[in-house]
Amino acid sequence: MSEVEQQAPRPRAAEGEATAGNAVERYRYVLTDQEAYELRLWWRRLVMDDKTLKRYTQQRPYPRGVRATLRRSATIESVMLTEAFRHLWLTLESRAWTEAVNEGPNKRNQRLEVWSVIAAVVCELRDETFDAPLGKRLGEKRPKTVDTPRMSDLRFQQLLDCHSREELIRRFRRALKLADNAGISVVRLADMVALWDLEQRGQYRVKAAQRFAFVMSDAYFKARALKPAAGD
Image (cartoon, rainbow, N blue to C red; front, top):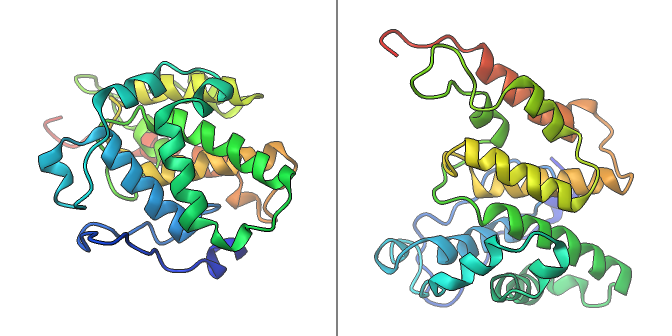
């Protein structure tokens, strides 16, 4: 468990927030409890209709065009200017980072950039599976095939070798399309983006098994190694 996560407060629900379905994944590499909670609520308001959303919150969904505009944004600059990102950023600043009011402009700029990438990626998800990592989903057998993964080994290696935030957005969006934009945890997905970003700034975790490439590869190749069930 990361030092950040150990110090994080438990998620605080908004006034009138439903209590069911508000759990967050127990172990994450970068995101705090509060960040994970606020992200998932924002994502639900982005993709769910009013009837489905009422299971989790009394808040209303965002207008459909809000998500569409975010999905068309391919650079961090364009993402930052979208209404969808503005909703996410203001929520995080008012709840998740109340202890960081005195941080310097460089730290705030780093937050802006990494969360713009997170928003650009996770908005592609149409449905999620709690606690399911992206690597596992990509390594699963493609429907109606004998033993073909959703993403080939070559493309998966390219996914691990992103060198810029824009490249990460592009490759992760392609990966999600191969995953049918579903079957992945929005929190796990965002956590991988945040972990990649930390490493791009030279902040590697001490244990190699907790670094971006290994975490992604471990989930992918474990899924690849699973034998198809009889009758598949």
